[in-house]
Amino acid sequence: MVKRIGILTSGGDSPGMNAAIRAVTRVGLNSGLEVFGIYNGYKGMVEGYIEPLTRNSVSQIIGKGGTILGSARLPEFKDIEVRKKAISQLKKRGIEAVVVVGGDGSYRGALSLTEMGINCIGLPGTIDNDITCTDYTIGFMTALGTVTDAIDKLRDTSNSHHRCSIVEVMGNRCGDLALYAGIACGADIIVTSDTGFNEEDILDRLRELDLIRKKKHAIIVISEKITDVEKLAKKVSLNTGFSGRATVLGHIQRGGGPCPFDRMLASQMGEKAVDLLMQGIGGQCVSIRDNKIVAYPIEKALSMPADSRKPITNLFERLL
Image (cartoon, rainbow, N blue to C red; front, top):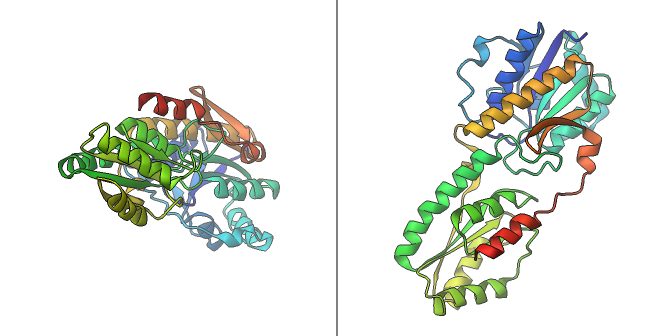
């Protein structure tokens, strides 16, 4: 039976990672395990930046944003020789299994370690909500609240100056943050990789809002990496009756204390991860599906096609 486990956070930080660290540590300790924190992700694993965690180590962190373990990206972890160094560091300390909190890249590292004899369980820590096997990732709901609050504030000033606010949000390849925030804020236009981007259609829609519907302001929510929002704002000013203004929310979306939902989700997922490792199970990732905490093989999770957002997209269209 496993006696020592480690936990690391990898990739971009997300609100709720600390809650996951706390849950894994406390559930592990209460189950008779020794728990070790691996600092700065896989990089810290390779370099041996590993320390024991106690109840006091994780006291009062459930409401803190970011991650007390730090995070770093290590593309070199794809190299088997680099992974061998990491495993050597783990074995030196008697660590037999690891909980990995992060996104799909972190999951691939966890799967590789499992295949080399170190059982790993993945927890979905990312604000993007781009892990297909889970309905929600740890941090998504908090980031959604941050984005919604920002757009609500922008609406006040847009309404005062007959502006069109174009708000770029994170999400990488996944448009969930833009789609959910757009609906929650009553946006006029939402642009994601799923909806596609047609500049002329957007300008036509804005002219309709201005000339026919006589709206005082307009809100466009757009996922990152789709277009240059500053250039789009200038075209809005030149081609419609609105004054275009672009706002890139950036990394503010990752900050702040996790909302209650993310604290609960991280705690439930952390418990599940420890239970799986104690059963000698590795190579799986924890998810929430239909309000139930379940686990999927990482290989299956990484190959799942993206869930259709059509019901949410349809809702937006019917609310216009």
